[in-house]
Length: 147
Image (tube, rainbow, N blue to C red; front, side, top):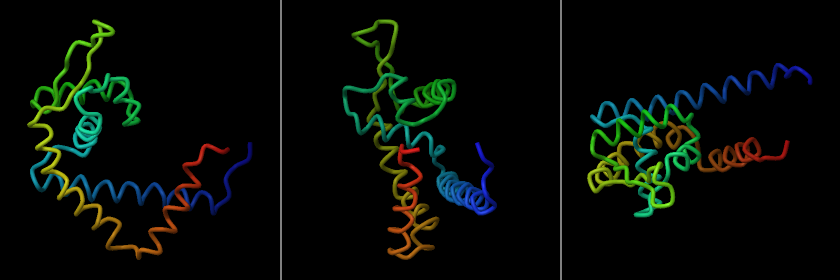
C-alpha cells in the first residue's frame, strides 16, 4: 500500500473542509430558526418516505449511515418529543417498527425551507450550474464501488 501524494492529501483536506462547512451552515440555520438538529430531519424524512409500513431501527441505521448506538439515542429523543412512534414488530415481537407521527411530518415540512435555504447558501450561491454538474460527476467517481 502506498502513501497518498501531496495532491491527494490536499484534495482530501478540501473535501472534508467543504463538507464540514456546508453542514455547519445547515446546522446553524436550523438552530437559529429554533429547529432540532439536521439528524432529526434525516430520520423524519426516511420515515416519511417509507410511509405507514415504517422502518426497523436497523433499517433506519443503514439508511442514515450512523452507528447503532447513535441511532438508538436519536430515536429515543425524537420519540420523546412526539415526532415518531415505536410499534411492536409483527414479525419479531422483540423488535420495533418506527413510524413518523403527524406532528413529526409537520416538523419536517416546516424545517425544509430553512434547510433548503442553507443548502442554497452553502452550495448554490457559490457554484455555477456548470460547476455543480462537474462536482456531481467528480463526487460520483468517489462514491463508485469500483476500487
